[in-house]
Structures are given as C-alpha cells and as structure tokens.
Image (cartoon, rainbow, N blue to C red; front, side, top):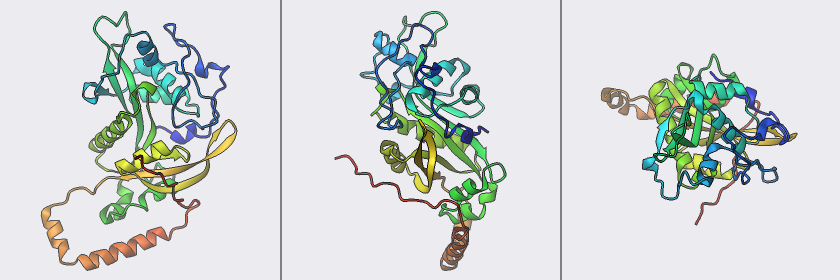
Length: 307
C-alpha cells in the first residue's frame, strides 16, 4: 500500500533544481502548464514531457484522435521518466522517487491512456506509444491499516445500510493522482480514466466499499468532474496542502460502490418489514454520526454549470 500521506504538504522543488530539468532525447522547455491543480498565482512549470515534443516535431497529431483510438494499460518501468515529467507539469507539490517507482512497477493500481505512434516515427528503443493521461490509486486500505479518523470520515457517510454495518469488513481505495496532457484536455479523458479505474478496482478488489480522494479547494474544474461522476463531498481539511510555504485547504470526496448483489429472496423477505428496516438504519446512522471527529465537513463552493 502506497503511503500517500507522506507526499502531502511537501514544497515543490525550485525551478533551479532538477524538478524541471531537461530530459533525455534533447527535450526542451515548452509553454507553461495549464493544469487546474496549480494555484492561480503559481509560477507555472514548463511543458517538458515527451508527448509535447512528439506533437511539436510533427510526429504525432491529436487533432482528430477519438477516444476509441486510445489504448488503456498499466504503467510500466519504462514510463518512469515520462510519468515524473507529467506529474511535475500537473501538480504544485513534489512527488518523490518512491511514488514513481510504485506507480510504474505495479505496487499500486495505475492506468495510462496512450495513443500509438504512427508507423515509421519510432526509432531505437523508443516506446511505440505516447501517454496522454494517468490515474494512480492506492488499494487495500482497511480499518486496520488506514488512519482511524480517515476510515470513519469515509464510511460514516455511506447511506447504504449493509455497507454501513459491514464497513469493518470492507476496504477503501484512495485516488493518488489524476492528470491529462495539455493537448488532450477538454475531451473527457480524465472522466474516462476515473470511470475505468472505478470499475477495474472493484473487479480486482470486490471488498472495496468506496474510492476517495482529496482535491484542493480552488480546483473547481476537478470538483465539477468528480461530482458529475458521482463522488460526494464528505470532509474538509484546513491547510491540508503546503505550496511555496502557503497553506491550502482541501475537500475529501468519496464514491460509494453499490452494495453487493444479494439473492432475490433476500430482497423479497425484507420488503414486508421495510418500515422497521428504515428505523433500524436511521438509528444506526445516527449513532455513527454522533461519533466526534476532529474536522467537520464543509460545503464545497457552488459551481455554476457551463451554458
């Protein structure tokens, strides 16, 4: 299990360090990143990932690329450098080498959206595809391995009765990172990655009751997307991130998986005492919600939908 908390609140490396270094293959600094995860006043990092150079050199054209033409695969060791470059473009916090090793070696769930390069445009040992988007998820977080406050924060908001009473038997999945290349934004790729990850994680870990994440409070584009998919705001954390020495707040969002399918006879048997069932559920949830927590959920900002 990846210790994601160890990656929070870490100041990003300064531009004169290797955070925005030139990469192998003659890659040069490009336009500034347009990632919505970056603070508005933040000095935007340059685009240095391989994907941008492929497009600039005319070896790849995404103008008419459709979702059906993309491939989705786990990250692999040869992706390390590109994954690091893309994360440096997307996020204002620094992720250490242990994270990139875990993401590209299978120690955590990962999914990359890639596009195949045209025949004849690949040379030597160069990868035959280019990464357009990435999602990474830490799985297998249980009541025994997760921070008790975090586990309670997520599961106490699950409105399904069976999931609530069996929460100690369930695990959680935590979305570590999600991002798409600048040239691939606005096409629904981030949503596609999340939806695929939700499905694959549940298939691989049937006991997973929810997937949760933290999103910085000013990233309204991400908040809008998560809510459209079905994530719910379940918590608020003051000063969760530290960027350039400044504290930034964050919301906790969770997606709750539907309960496991029970035999039809069970639902039939329950129907006759539905009023009693509702009373028991309400009483139990009132008891769970009465447990004090250190941080109370805060309503996220209202986000106007585009015309």
